[in-house]
Image (cartoon, rainbow, N blue to C red; front, side):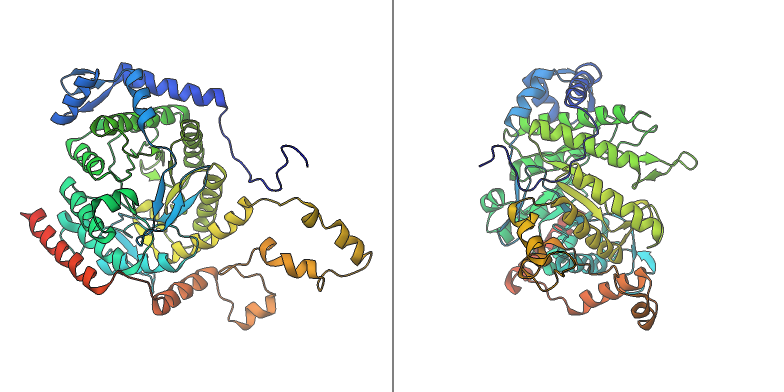
Length: 483
C-alpha cells in the first residue's frame, strides 16, 4: 500500500493563488460596505434594513458580517435532477456540465443554416438535438421565440422543452409572474411544489444589471425562486471598460460583490435558498463597442470566479461553446474548443451557451453538435491518465517483446475502448476515403448530423395528459400575463 497514491488525477487550471482568492473576497466585502448597491424594491429594502444594512434611499450598503452570515446558510452540495426525478448533475468537486445557448432573437436554421428570427419550433428543435447529444447535460430555451407574445414567451418555451427533452432546464424568464407560472408548470410535472423543491429540475436565471443595480423586477423574480425553493443563478454581465473596470481583477471583484449581494438578499428572504456564485465578464471590441463572448478574458475571469466559489463551497456558472464568428468556420471551432477546455480545467460546474454564434445574437443547432464533439474530446482529457500496475503494462510489454505487436493481445482488447477517444464528427480516416465521400467539410458533417437527429431521434416526452394540462396552463398564463 502506498499512502496518498492516486491512480488517476484530472488536469487543473488555476489563474490566481489562494491568497489572491482571499483578496477578491475582501475586495467584494469592501465594495458592498463602502459603495453598496442601488435597489428600490420595498420588501427587499425592509428586509435589508431590519437585518442591519445601511439603507439610505435607494442606496444600500451591506456590512461584511451580514454577507458572511448569508454565505453560511447557503446550501452546499447542490444536485440538479432530470425531469423524471433522477439525480444527474451533482455540482460538487469541480464537476463540469454543459448546456445549450438561449435568449437570442435569431436562429441559424437547423436544416439550412439560414439566419432568421427564432420561432417556437426552433426552441423545440434545439431541445430535441440537445436531448440526443450525449455530452449536452442540460437545456435552455434555444433562443427567444418571436412568434409568441413576448410577455408570455417563457411559458410557451417551457412547454416546447417538456415535449422534447427530459434533461434539466435553465431559463431566464421575462417577468416575475412569468417565472412563477413556469415554476407552477414545473411543479405539475414534478408532482407538486414539495417534490420540485426536493428534486429540482428547473433553474431560473434572474440577472441583476451591472454595475451594482438590482431592479424591482429582478428582485421579484429572485423572491419567486426563493418561495418555490428552487436553485437560482444571479449573474450580471460585466463588460470591461463599459459596465465594469478595464482590469480583469476589477471585473472579478465587482462580479463577486454582485453575487454576494444576491446571495445575501436571497438568504434574507428565505434562509437555505440554493444559489450560485457567478460571473459573466465580457470583453469588448474597442473599435465597435460590442461585447465578445469568446475571448481569453472570459476564460480567465470565469476561472478566477470558479476558484473563489470552490473556496466557499458554492456551485459556479460559466459560458463556453460559443463563438463571435458569424458562421460555422475555423474561428467558431477554435473559440468554442478553447472555452470548453479551459472552463473544464477550471472546474466550472454549470456551463451554458453551447451553440451561440455571432456574439450571442443567434443560436445554431449545428454549432451545438460541434460543441458536443468538443466536450467529448475535453472530457477525455479531463479523465487524465490512470497509472497502476495494470495500465503500466510492464508484464504485457515483456510478453510481446521487441519487434512484437500489441494488436491482438487481450490487454489491448480489454483497454482500448476506454483509453481511446472516438469522434462522431471529426474525421480521422485516410485522404482517399475523404475524397471518395465527396470531400465533405466539417460544416457539412455538422449539418448532416443535425438533420439526422431531427429526423430520427424520438425523445421521451411527458405523458399526453400532462402535456395537455401544460398547454392549458400556458394558455391561461398567457391570458393573465397579457392582461
